[in-house]
Length: 413
Picture: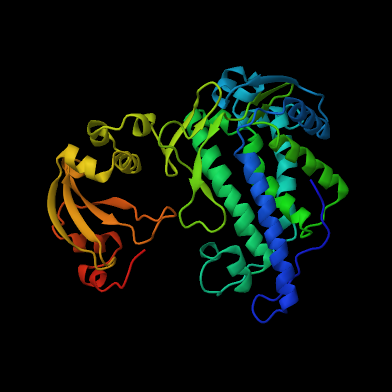
């Protein structure tokens, strides 16, 4: 990790600030976003792993907690790692801890490494963390970083949103989480280190250090450097007492900007294959940020859609086909249509559909009130109770409003 002089100036939540102070904060914010994007590149990298750097850094992590260097086993994906994990990784962690304590032995290796990581990731907040201002109007997530600064949010709080929360959403929630679910081995998958997908917490500390907003002891800085090297060098890894299984990085990662995201957030999306694919072919499929079965992307059909119980998967598959094509192929019956009071110039359409309670239901087809980044407004379907015959009443119900209340809306989003 690099060190840069200077620090975020602490200033009142509300009130006037000098133009020079605002300019200093803005420049440091610009630099923070630049470093954040650098870490985003590491987190989404599809380059082959730097095996030498990864092994040297992981060996140093072992040394820091008093262990000798492990034997390294490299695999192409997290799925390929599962059969190779050592026995001490397969036993439930709670049983391993209980067994070690009953023998008077050290805590299991994984627990000690977890303690080391937890100490480092909480460095920015070890004194209680930065104050979070209240009553400033729009939530910070609905402002650009610069707007948030100008509205009076502290630089530290803007950092929380535009670095920590942004990378957490992209790398932890959108990439690591669906991969863990796809592994379908929660006890084992929960005891991995995520390599490049640990970048969200490492960047949170690294950015503060590099813009001068955080001071740490040199020994802490050296330990952070080791974790950062691992994140820049490889994919997921499992640390056993004597054997460490390490994965290559993915061969494919496809992501798109989050619509309306103002802090660089991205979500997985691919229209013609896996959104994340490792070198052995294993991976996950995603449609605009929703994890889906492969058929949704590769071979969506009306029959599969009607057999699907998960409403989000069903919605994604319909969007993959396109609403017009789906309505025609499925032979949906139009119940009624009406102008959308909350979205002038757009039409609400209510259809009978072959799902819902008793095998039938209704869906309200509407147009999003906001324009996506590509300049278009997305159409979407909302499942509504079969008793609705009025599209406006159905739209109101979806917002928790009566028909009369929804009809009076100036505009929805």
